[in-house]
Image (cartoon, rainbow, N blue to C red; front, side):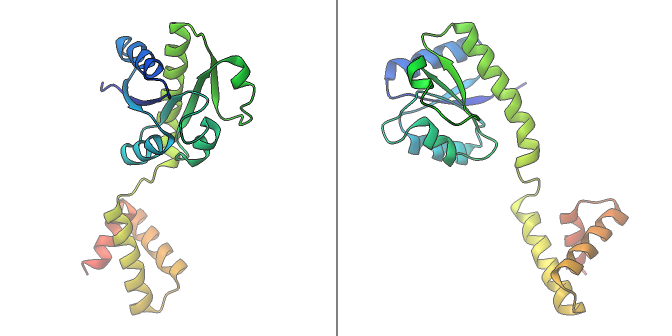
Amino acid sequence: MERETVIVAFESDKSRERIRDILEGSGTADCILCRSAAEVKRTAQTLGVTTVVCGFKLADQTAEDLFGDLPPACSMLVVAAQSMLDLCENEDIFRLASPMRRGDLIASVGMLLRMGRRLEKYVRPRRSREEESAIREAKALLMDRNGMSEEQAHRFLQKRSMDAGVRLGQAARLVLDG
């Protein structure tokens, strides 16, 4: 099984490298190191990474503000002094007080990776861009040719999909192909 990837973002080079060494050394995950919230956002969206381990504050944003900008399936573990963690009001952010034990970090990140896999099933789109495009085109064709509303065209595609035992995108391609 391929190892998962987490984003590790701290202002301090030493903290980033220490967390990376623990996670990669234990086989928990591969790490992408980031210095700023902007870098974290870009990386999470581009690569679909579901777990971020970071400090309370990065150079350009707090962890709490950053969390609000991340994709919905992304979870966050903030590692900081307890006094800083107490300032974090968002209940959806996981916290680990430093100094931390190696085993606590590994267990926490492992749990977040498992949660991310489960969440992705519900949050991530299940259709490719090509399928979405084919569905839109097929609905437009049905609406134009047969005077259907968008809802009627969609229901027609769903029924065709179920009757043929194929995905909605495939049913749309069948309509487009004639």
